[in-house]
Length: 353
Image (cartoon, rainbow, N blue to C red; front, side, top):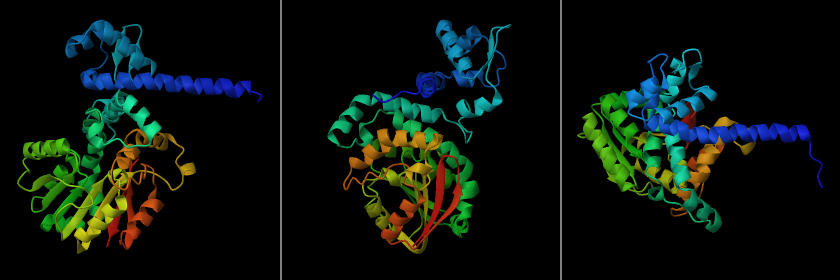
């Protein structure tokens, strides 16, 4: 029998217990987001459980226990003398302010959807079959949009597009743009709001997402220049695009090389592909960090099963890294791949024919 190092055992038990607390607290975060508890706490100063319950139309006994969990995790500050709880401004940016680029409420919504899909995922492990995007709990769709949309709103028009050679000038003058794998259309709508002389087309295989994207464009007043269609990444319509964008979607595709070839064919000779992918380094050993841990988990539950459910089923995974992405794009016929920006969640690549 292998000898056990007691100090290492106790340290690992502590790590596992910490993860256990994080796991159940993820549910608490999702509840706080869904019930508006964080929004009610934001800017309210010190507040009692009873007052928070009154403001949110919830039961005080549940709220009191929820607040105790939040205080134990450092999300709120507890004053035992006054029996009040306060959400600091820094925490508010992460859990209450949906316009903040560091807002993570959507991430916890997406993770909650994965727990609901547990039985389906266990079956996929046993059979090797994929899980189509449409087969997931509906919170995945809204959660993913709410995870990435604040970053798009903060960076896309302000820094990512200006970092692409000549693209911002084309957009201001009037360009033709395709968003492949557009989901609920958040990035497409953001661009359409910013560039009134350009036209935008969003494509996605998921009919409900396309319908929601159309509603979003209508609500934003840009439906006359932002249209959405159901189409696969490997055969979406149109040609001569000045800009094609793929936001956090290439690794989800069953045939990313085929999709990249179709993008290459659809671009104007001087067109540009803006590729936004999850932040990763080359090599598993270089991604053994909190961001890598999160993305590998999401990739196991969402991205890889989604790819395996499609034709080819490459199963690229959410942590492919820039080296793998560059090789894939080169195989598809692109001649130039350059990283132009990065955030804690994403790397941003300029790709030219």
